[in-house]
Amino acid sequence: MTGFRHVRDRLVHQGYIWHVAVGTFESPDGQQFERDIVRSPGAVAAVPLIFDAEGNASVILVRQYRAPYDAYVLEVPAGMRDVAGEPTEVTARRELIEEVGLDPGRLELLTEFYPSAGMTDSVLTLYLATDLVSVPQDLHGPEEEHMEVLNLPFDDAVAMVERGEIHDAKTVIGLLMVARRLERGDRP
Image (tube, rainbow, N blue to C red; front, side, top):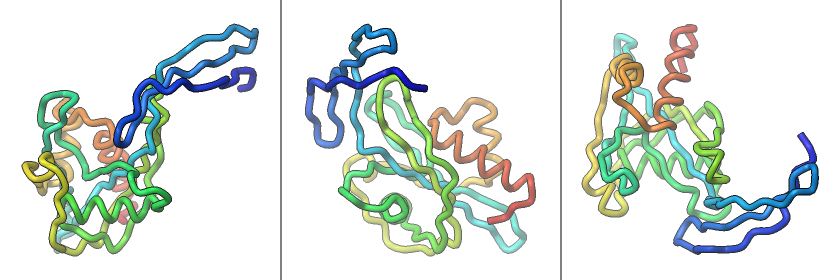
């Protein structure tokens, strides 16, 4: 599609990682309009998948406090792209080590998606992490210091998505993408 044009941004708030701008745009017929936009460096997440000796899959999830919802959220390990120029694979590895104490031997790109296209320019890069090795955690901030790390049978986690018990978008997308691969017989 062509015809829309970004004219300018007016900074409304500059935060530590994000900033809020009022963007001015022009439609194909020349009409100018404004939209509030949360500008973000993006984020990275990984679905840490473990297979036992019998080939049964489990997934590592974290239950951590999320201030915007004032609630605990069950999700895959993730983090902001808050280190300038850091490749997404490096961010994914760093977040897995920090949050759950696992260093992936293998990271495979699952997808990139827009977590909330109507309000932010954020892009979330999602990986499948396998061949995991236990390492010391490197927790950052009160949310991580008080989060719970869970090792769940993979099928149970997918069933939780289907029952509406997991609400986090990156986790829903990641678990369902991995489930589809496993159903096809594509074992990572």
